[in-house]
Image (tube, rainbow, N blue to C red; front, side):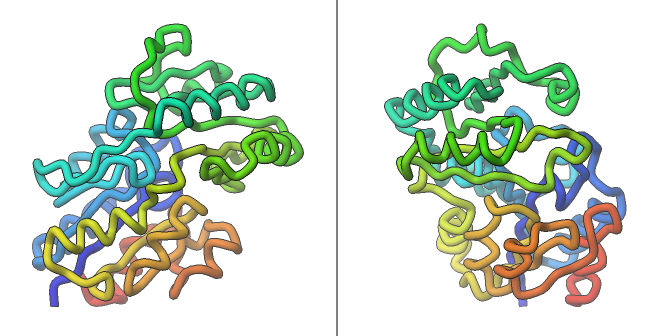
Length: 257
């Protein structure tokens, strides 16, 4: 039976700042040769997905944590944050004195320190932003307390996800702000309708809380071994870590390659 397979990037297909694991890329290609469909499922906007990831080959893509969804060349959803929402969130981030990246269709604009810029070399300075629609805002905070203060400022008006495992070796905590009406789980269901498939036929891989909805929506949700405990608790299975080619090993155990 054909499966629809969904793969997060950072912490799932690849260690942040590194190219995809070769064994993982080869495994995804093998699933497609076996008749299954493979989809990216990333928080990144399209402009920040590296060529090394794209050249793996995918049947469709979920970008910006569900804000843009494609199937082949067809765009199924293109929903940036409402302008008032993105302005409010950016004001709250600036008032809190945090670093940020505005993620738009044509570029990403940031005011982050140089050591973070090295992880996102294709971004532009925040001063270059000209008011384009924003799909998602990533932020970088000095402590968990700073994240809590930001959350209080936003008061539930947006979706805020904090990543506990993305900034190893740094005191900064990273996270993202997006429109609560879009998420990766809703994107999975949209792709299922397009391909006349059931969520029960889907397998989703992820490692962070922006994968929560897709891990729960898929018939089989697989958390990475490097995922937070709260993410693992939402999944049906836990595979090996990203660094240990967890996706490739899980696909083999499932008999998909």
